[in-house]
Length: 299
Image 1 (cartoon, helix red, strand yellow):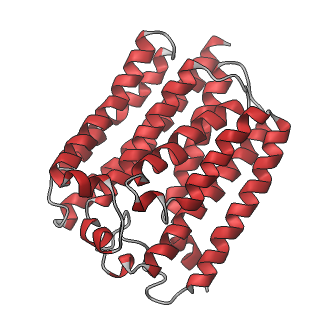
Image 2 (cartoon, rainbow, N blue to C red):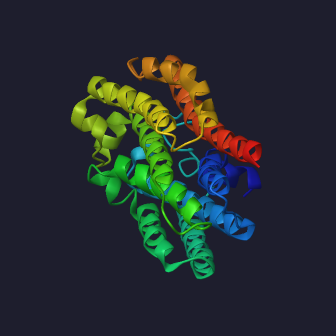
């Protein structure tokens, strides 16, 4: 068992998402005049551990149900293949999942004690989404919602409230953007796994709408993120420099266009999935940079 195998199993490159979400919420807090470095570090660790919990539990249950034996694996969907090739045992992956979840809960308790009990409901809800995403939410047409809330909305709100427990309108706007983007991250990656997910007992939006309608939903939601950003800058709820997030529009157009490509054309669709990830991470990173730059220019 090597470190490289475990890095693949926990999908290490995708752990950049919770880090960026923590930075987005904290950047807004800094812009508003609040920041606690210890809380930031602890909460970021919590988000990463919960993301590992989701990733590894998803691998574990998709192995048990046989879904990952029938998927077309890419770097974005279909599972890692680690369990199917026997590089790790299911019980090892489950142990790591539960271990990360427990450690995240302990650290989250410390963060709540250092800040406010107002954070507790958000943390508990986020942990429930992480623990039951695969076996409950993804099997009852709620997977995309659970991802959007648990891995998008709640992390940004929490990352703001660990510095300032009073929720603000700009924080709600940024959390909505994060929620839509994370919802779309899962949505697009479900396209190639449609048949395997159906056989494995999952129920999701792609199955309900069909691929073409789901592609339209993906495109509309993608560009709604930029609309939210523009509206809140025009309303002066967010600084003008937040519009740096618009720099990822070319990736958005590419991903939205490729969403209408037959997902069985793996090479072309993979380019759309790559653009999707670049857009999701880049948009939020650029917004955070804009917030920090606006803060520095104002001081």
